[in-house]
Length: 165
Image (tube, rainbow, N blue to C red):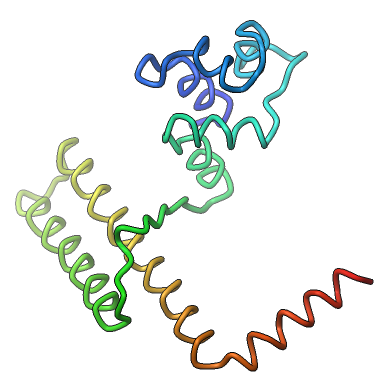
């Protein structure tokens, strides 16, 4: 889906309060916000910080999902609730989610076709698995940082030095 169309749908979604509620939270007039997300308006454009604020206010991340899709990628949310305290448990959880995907796919393909409902269920399982894998990646980074504080400190010093140049 097109990014501007997605922004338009997000802003005008009644579940999020509609454009009037979002405009107030963004500190702008309803007319300006409506123009910024109007696919046919050329005078106003939604800024990145405004798009980010809209996603934060609504909890709807479809704008960034549309951006990622256009760039050939995916947006994957990693919630703190999915993150485990133990690296092994995080790895096992990610593996279990992958098994859930394969189970769902196997059931969907028993008749040789994937129905609309099966597609939705599969996409949800895949999203969960991606989130768990991202959580695993973050956990690996944290474990590496705690096991190698000298390397992390060196990277921090190099970044600070690069910023001063």
